[in-house]
Length: 109
Image (cartoon, rainbow, N blue to C red; front, side):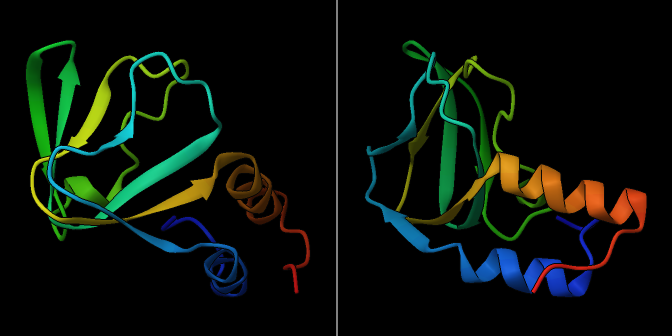
């Protein structure tokens, strides 16, 4: 999201809702193909392949500034290890806004 122009970031924020997940709840599961980018705001999320924990992402860290496993279908599942706040952003919309910046097109309203 760092690459977005300020006005586009504001427009994207208006279309985004902060969601919560209780410990043990999945944010997404391995194999899903829904085009959305998930960012952890607070709490801790574990990235899992079946029953194996491959790593964790904690809100407020440098790693949390990047989307959780953006490739599709999802290669891993993301499960809340603690109470988690996160956002789920339409990946296609964000790509369009980034393209506007690259092409130096006028910002959206």
